[in-house]
Amino acid sequence: MMNEITPLERRADGGPGPIRRTALHDTLVSHLRDMIIEGDLSPGTRLHEGQLGEQLGVSRTPLREAIKYLASEGLVELVPSRGAVVKRFSAKDVHDMLTVLQTLEELAGKLACEAASDAGIAEVRALHDEMVRRYKVGDRLQYYKLNQQIHSAIVQLAENAALADMHAVLQTRLKRIRFIGHEGPEKWAAAVAEHDEMIVALEARDKAKLSEVLGRHLMNAWERVRASV
Amino acid sequence: MMNEITPLERRADGGPGPIRRTALHDTLVSHLRDMIIEGDLSPGTRLHEGQLGEQLGVSRTPLREAIKYLASEGLVELVPSRGAVVKRFSAKDVHDMLTVLQTLEELAGKLACEAASDAGIAEVRALHDEMVRRYKVGDRLQYYKLNQQIHSAIVQLAENAALADMHAVLQTRLKRIRFIGHEGPEKWAAAVAEHDEMIVALEARDKAKLSEVLGRHLMNAWERVRASV
DNA sequence: CTTTTGTATTCTGTATGCAGCATTTTCTGT
DNA sequence: ACAGAAAATGCTGCATACAGAATACAAAAG
Image 1 (cartoon, each protein chain N blue to C red):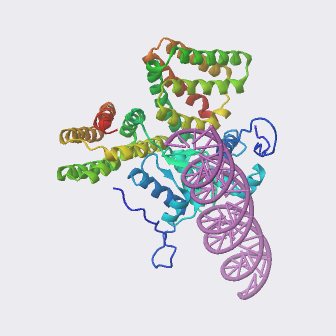
Image 2: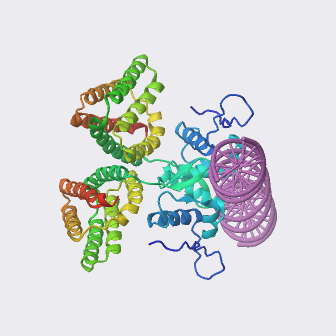
Image 3: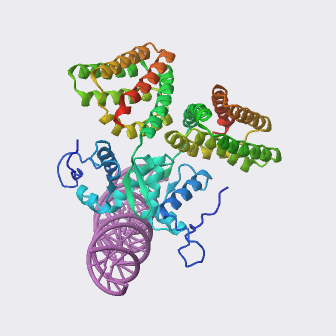
């Protein structure tokens, strides 16, 4: 990754077309979040208000507001009188997050089997098939993205906003890690196999099974990334 | 509740003594959070930047930053071009939150039995005894506060930062509700009895038992508050 | 050469000002 | 009197400006 830092798309210019005048706050938050996740802002980096604001083409005020938002999300840390730094996660932190994520997904699995519509399940199946396709081609990036989407989709099926919130926060915090985690072929194959079990269990609405597989999947996730943390 | 809205303590004056120049941001966040929890700012209320800032004796800038922080925490909702309003929770929202909280506390119970020091457990016991004392006297407010503290303390014993974070967010969101929930004598007695089971299980480091009791306790919590939501 | 202290610069924290959007009030035509 | 339009008001969103804290640097003392 390590992209150049680019100014935000603002479309404040009189360009034609439907002006997506999305609130700057949201845009900034997403942008910064992505920069952190993708490693443009690595852990420990100080978020320099003046400099960063200039690079993004935004004044300090909305930038500071976005930083505060991300601080509450746990991606950056606020140091009094010294600004904000990108939070650094220890191996234990990652393990802890995965432990909680595991519990949440087990719950999501149970709830999803009860609450999901057939159409919803079909959508997850579609994502799954697409992911397997990417796996066979060896497209790691798209594989990862679809992988995340599937987990999020299952959580969505649970129809529990609080659960979705908590899951999203942890998943975001972990994205930076998972993004890096490059497992070998055999572990990758194992992960795909687990996903296969997942989708089958979901389609069968087998609560216990789905919950178990999701839990196991995340336990193994730790094994897969522990080396790189 | 419904206190007067008071200006923040700032100690910017040249008063003697160790100046607790705690960052204004943190102070503001806590203050606003409390105002929301205690009902000074009820759900649906618009957070008027100018007015509120004047009442608190703070300019709009830091106030806006604090609001953004609380938005990420889920206590307020940001409406583009129309500011922020205190988030309103439906009965389903509360139920969903309790469901997740239940799962998290079950996990916390298991981890606490493994990780807790004897001293840590003793502290929880002390809180528990104090709570029972308050119960017998009928001091509802202190009872509630100690109740919350005990749950938080058990989560702390689990030594899992991510778990503590998620738990804190949900507990904060729910505080507003629980604060209101005034159960009758018999339900109150039942709750205390459950707490008794909890502390015994914790002292015995009985993972399964503690987890089970915590889960049951929160299921019952829903029964206790559902009427008032 | 190392350490310390005073100064200068840089950055954060807070306040204020201005422009644009939303809403409400008022004016006008029927 | 009533409906619609236009003006006016109030508020948010963003930018800028100023003050205080922290850091970096440099000069002087040991």
